[in-house]
Image 1 (tube, rainbow, N blue to C red):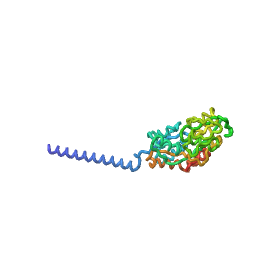
Image 2 (image 1 turned 90 degrees about the vertical axis):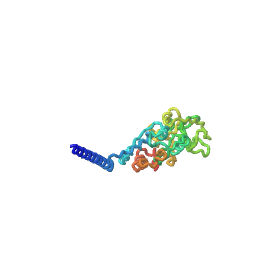
Image 3 (image 1 turned 45 degrees about the vertical axis):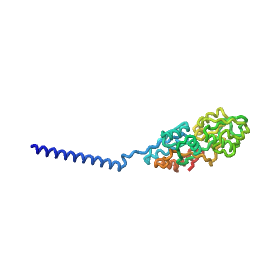
Image 4 (image 1 turned 120 degrees about the horizontal axis):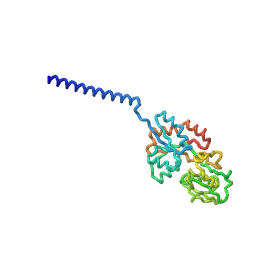
Amino acid sequence: MKKFLTTLLLTTGIFALTACSSGTGATNGTEESTEANGDSQAKTEITVGATSVPHAEILNQIVEDLAQEGITLNVQEFSEYTVLNPSLSSGEIDANFFQHTSYLNNYIEETGDKLVSVGPVHTEPMGIYSKTATSLDELADGDKIAIPNDATNGARALLLLESNGIIKLKEGVGDKATIFDIEENSKNLEIIEMDAATLPRTLDDVKMAVINTNYALEAGFNPMEDALAIEGSDSPFANILVVKEGDETKPEIQALYEALTSDKVKTYIEENYKGAVVPAF
């Protein structure tokens, strides 16, 4: 009887071990099959920070295109562009789309943050606007002109004023120009530096303002009709897609840039902004 019980227990144990082994194998097989079909693979997600017009509008045109490639694009809008690079450096966002190379280089020089351009997307010609004047000739002695207070857009505004004969800058200052580099100001104009986003609202208090196209569009201006003067199509200030150094070669970032520089986006820019925003690819 004792021998019979021992044999029975051994047989039962072997059967249990075989059953467990068989069950584990079935589970692994199912997982392998699922992975082979791609059902368990997580989709890539990218968050891109941008100012609303035109950057976020352009990004929103490619959300579905990237979704077809298994990439979820989250477009996070910022009202103040000065926080976009810090947000990228801190990892709050994966990329940003709002600035030109000169602005990025100046930011890197000031902070040491390791950010890089993936490539250019479009140019937004900066313009001179007024609520009271219909021509630059209407500038009178002592009038006020507002310009952006950040280094690169401030320099860009001064260069635009110079190219239209309003002021003259020291030779060779280029995109490093500041108000202290104004060499000639025959009309004793008061050049006031202000936050770029607030410039459209200052037009009630100044004769003219030099405004970035994105803020001009947000304020309801048509740059091609309302600007008293505007940068030419040869402007070197193309807006770029920016990421942390090392991320520029990631497949999802390359897919993002490819979508941003597609024929679809080029057509969208040309048809919707009619020269106020110009493709740079």
